[in-house]
Each structure stands twice: as C-alpha cells, then as structure tokens.
Image (cartoon, rainbow, N blue to C red; front, side):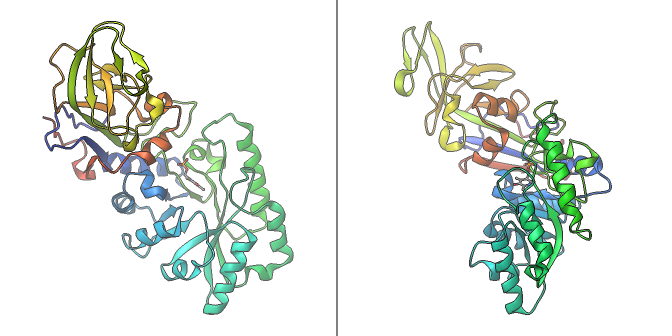
Length: 384
Ligand SMILES: *Cc1c(COP(=O)(O)O)cnc(C)c1O
C-alpha cells in the first residue's frame, strides 16, 4: 500500500478522516492505459467521481493525459465543464432529457444517444441551430438498460435522415458482466457489438469499462471507459485486485466503556454480551455511508487488530468491541481504520452485502477530506 499516512489520533477534531490518494489515482489511470496502448483511455467521473470529488479527480486525470470524461447527468457535465480545459470531451451517459438540448450544446457536452427519441430530439435541435452536433451512439448489446436495440440501429440504415445534423463520434455499448471473466454474456455482447459496429464503419468503438479492460485485447477497441478501477476498486471479482488503493477512511472514537456480561448493545438490543466486554463508540454511522447491513457483521481495525461491530449501526455512530486490544489503547479521539491497509474496500463491501461502488458513492459529506497530491504521494505522514 502506497498510502503511508498512519493516523492514530484525531488531531483536527473531525469525526472521521477520508484520505484520497491522487497519486494512486493517477497511477491507476496510467496502468489501465498501458494495458491497451492502441486505445484511448477515458475516465468515468459520474456521481462526483464515485464520491471522491470530480472537481479534484478530473484535473488529475487530465494532467495524466485523459481527454475523454464520462458523466451520467447533464448537470454533472456542466459542473465538470467549468473545471476542465476545453480540449477535453465530456460525454453524458444517460443522454438527453427533454429540454436540456440547449445547455448540452452550449456547454459542449456530447450526449450518449440511447434511443431514437433522443436522436430525433438532438437532430431537431441541430436543425434549429443550423449546425452539426456531436453524439455518441449507444447500442444495447444485451444488458437491456440503455441504448438502441439492434433493430433500431437498422432503422438508421434505412432512414439515414434520422442522423441529419449529427456527427457520430463513436458507437458504444456496456458490458453487464465484465467483472466475471468467465461469464458467457461477455462474448455474446462482444459479438453483437461487432456486428452492429459494422453498420458504422467510420465510427470508433467504445466498449470496455474497468472489468472489460481486463477481459483482454478483443474488448479494448478504440476508446475505454474505466471507472471503479481508477478509484482502487477491483475490476474483476475473480482475480486479486491489481489496482492501487485510493481511499482510506479513519473514524474517531467518541467514548469507551466496559460493560458486564448480559448487557444489550445498540438499537433493538440485537447484541447481548456473553462476557465482560470493552466497547468503543465511533463517530460514523449509516448517514456517513457505513451501511446498516454491517450491524453485528463488519469490523473496524486498529494496528491490524479486528474490532467487530457490536450491535446495530446507528445513523451517526457505531459500537465496536475493543476487548481484543490491551486496556487503555483506545481513548477519546483515537482513530480506527474502516478502509485502509487492514480492510479493503472490497472487504467492507462484502460484509455489507454490497459492492465497492456503493460504498464509495455512499461515503458521506461529514468526513474531513484530505487529498494527497500526486507529487507528494508516498512522502506524507500526517500521523499523530
Ligand atoms: C459506470 C459506467 C462505466 C464505468 O464502469 P466501471 O465498472 O466502474 O469501470 C462505464 N460505462 C458505463 C456506461 C457506465 O454506466
């Protein structure tokens, strides 16, 4: 782990400290790009760059050479446009909503056109402007979420006027099971994509998300769109995570106590102690993105020692069993690790019955956030 920050004590008075290693982010981007030297590597920065702060993350990726940014909503694209140089392309994955053609065009955002309806909307707007507008065209190759059905794509062949005023910058599709390398859907989606893209011989293909990049060269195509792997999440559920961790989360102890056997802990009294137990209450809960599903299942860590969550996760706090530590180790203001070298994003996601994506995007706004700049990465120690 490159992140050398070792926090032991909350010095700034915050309840929790979220540390985001921008050097690791950049290294992850460069690693993905090196895997496909013939492709352009973009970056998905939707949902505020998976919760990490798009206004900070996007410029770091830009400096690493990224010029293709993907957001989900127009508003995310507008916010990003104010933060990023004009030579970067911003693609809006959800495409157009009725009424936002003008802001999309004015902010030079490129919509991903997902339906004939969106296409008609964009084409009509191009006509009113008397201009050609850029668009990416999404094809549904088997996920049934966004994109045109292959039959609609054929309609474009018989009625090319549907594309009046529109320049297709690439055709794209999205893999439903890319994190499962052996899933049969990957190969069949690739076949559908190949066939459909033959209808647009001049348009580059954009296909691979993080998992797709790791499926091999067949999946790379012209433009890649990784998200989770940039942020340190595992691109594949079947293999060890090759990415550098980007996020570290430490939460402060508010109070410690020793309770006798037979004591109820937390809402609903779902835990009853079997022996004398030392407990610490830490200052984060489900409102801070630590899901209630971690109740009596997840853990925090201190110096490598696992400290199980005791009872239910509350909105603003969690009780943890600290009996495994020598008495007096944790006191008011001590920090325990929630995400870091002792507990990966994937591990906490698994304990919460969810995926790393949901943990990252759910991390609340109440943590004190520290960004380690790329040039400082590995050289900072803000412990104590
Ligand atoms: C979110 C998203 C991505 C990024 O996927 P990761 O699995 O995070 O790499 C790529 N493409 C589309 C269409 C998406 O919605």
